[in-house]
Amino acid sequence: MSTLTENKKKKTAIRGLGAAMIGFAGWAVLLVVFGMIDPNILKWTNILNLLRSMAKYLLVGVGQSVILITGNIDLSIGSVVAMSAMISATMMSKGISIIVAVLVSLVCCLVVGVINGVLVGKFKLPPFIATLGTMFCARGVAYMANNNRNTDAIASGIGKEAGESFQNFFYYGKTLGVYNAFWIAFVIFLVVFFIMSKTRTGRHIYAIGSNVEAAKLSGVNVFATTTKTYLISAFCSFVVGLILCAQASMGNMEAGVSYEMYGVAAGVIGGISPLGGTGLLLGAFAGAGVWQTLENGLGIIGAPVGIQRIVIGVIVTGAVLIDVVVRQGVIGKKAKK
Image 1: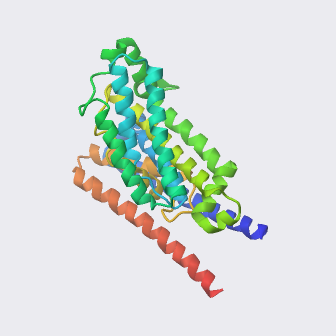
Image 2: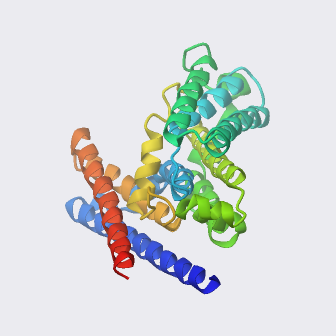
Image 3: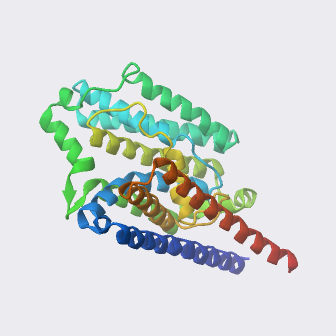
């Protein structure tokens, strides 16, 4: 039995690595193609801006991918992003220290993650319905944070120096020549990648996505593990909210709109199966890069927003279709045996 399990893990890992590598290859091709159309796209200044803009897609991609691997989904991501931005910005604009504002925002976001975990993992609500409900609730909190209006500039409350420090740390500042926003997202990606590939929690997440009943029989605590995935997603959304707050120097009630779908796109493009159980988190990195490069490149060459969305939609649908076809092929082979 253990040998069969190990063989299955190896096949899954190889398949996930292959899908991730295809994602990275696609990213490289896109850069070359857009670079041929407009050489400015390959200039170091634009690459740096691309990496900084990619940070938010990488984070929501990581959060959503972890949940997709369990066979679930999180529709509350975008609203949690807005809640994070609005709560932290409202408090800072009223003179409350950065540390307190960030901690309060973090706690509120993690509460949403716990609620999602309880609804899906304990009460067995369909994840689409459970997170749809928390999506509306979190967006409502974002609206209520500053009495149904966007916040004033954070510097008006905490002062110009503190405001600039916050903005530089999360968005405008650089470390080793690369914007901090990317480094923050990259470090979080590495931590979650380690959790998924080297820890018991990661193995349990894959087990739930492969076969939840078999996972239970193997002693996996489905409720606890499911809650952990939603907490990871909520934390990633919280950080994205801070990045957007730093970028704009204020809170916007409409921040994060459709980010849950951006997370799905990043994961699926990188080979994370929306059917659960397969895919490497490395793919989410490639998927975020593909998404941001398409958005950046199509914008630079003047493609209408409608065309941009159609291209992304076709790529996402094609990636899911390929995953379904591959799975059906594997199932068909097993049936013949």
